[in-house]
Image (cartoon, rainbow, N blue to C red; front, top):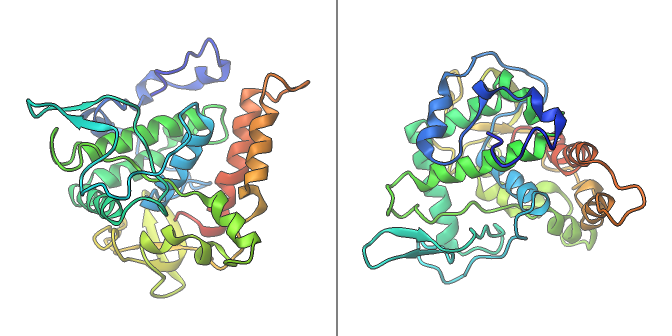
Length: 306
C-alpha cells in the first residue's frame, strides 16, 4: 500500500506486512483484497460511507503534500473534470493533477455524477469491499493509532477514487471523476458567525449524502461493526444493505456543535507546529497522532460511522 514512502525513512512503518498491501494503481488491484482475514476490531472501526470519504479527502488535501483543493468549474457538464482531457483517438489522458472540489462549491451535475458513481459501486459490491477493508484487523494495525494513519488514508482515498473512475470503462462518464471534500473548517466558521448552530445544520453534505434520519434508535451491522443511531437511507444509500440485509446507515447526534478542533485556527496551528522553522517541531508520528485525535476523531465521535 505504502509504495510512496520508505520504511527506512519512517521506522514505525516496518509493522506493515507486504501481505496486507492495498494497491491503488487500478480498481482491479483493489478488488483483489477481498480475501483478507475476516476478523474485525470494534474499537474506532466504523462503516465507510460516502460522507466519510469526503472527510478523508479533506485530510489528504490539507496534510499529505497534495495541492490545496480548488473548486471545480460550475459549468462542467456531467462526467467532466477540468483536469481530464480526451485525445482525438478517444483515449482519456490525465495531463494535470486531479482537482478535488468542495462539495458546497461544485456544480449540481458534478454532485449528481458522484451520487451515480457511489450507487453503481454499491450495486456491484465494490463499495462494500472498501467497508470491509477499512474494518479489517490487519488493516487496523496501521490505519489508526499509527504514524501510518495519514499515509494509509491517502492511498485508501486514491484507490477509492480509481475504483469509481473504472466503473464505466476507460472512457466512460466516470473516467474523470474526482472525489469531493467536506470543508468542515468553513462550516465551523459559519457556526461561529451565527449562520448555523450544529453539524447537521451547517454541513449540507450530510443531508445530500443519505438525507435526514427517518427514525432513531435503529441498529446496523457493517463488516461486523454494530452501530446505533438515526436511520439514513436516501441517495446514494437507497440500496446499501448491512450484514443482515437491512437498508441504510445510522448516524449519531447531528445536533451537536462543530468542535473547535475543526477550526481553521486549530488546523493552521497544527501545520505550523510541524514546520522545520519551529524551535522544537513535532515529529511526523506526533503530527499524525494529533491529526487523528483532532479533526478526524472530532467528527467521528459526534456523528459515528457517518
